[in-house]
Length: 93
Image (tube, rainbow, N blue to C red; front, side):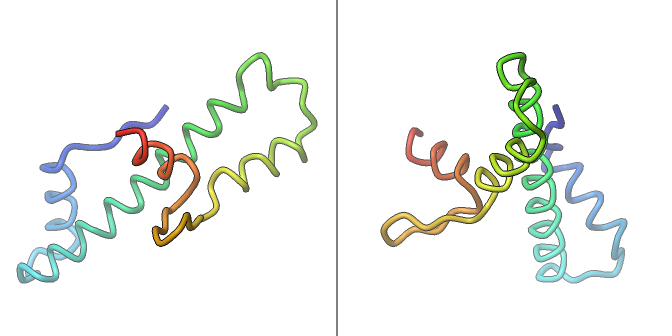
């Protein structure tokens, strides 16, 4: 499973990407990096879920459909979420 890097690591990576960035640009770069890490994290979690012994016998096309549905953006009432797992985690917390 992939883990999310620390804020320090993300900022260091953004500075390395553009060492002459002003504060607004640095903020934008770190936000983009955080979104990329978040998407990778969710994909990793779904892949781990689909590799469980109870899921191994499912046909690959069924696994792909489950993955697609779990990772697609959703809206509930007036709120938008990047995917199903984000919506669940925000409602629970």
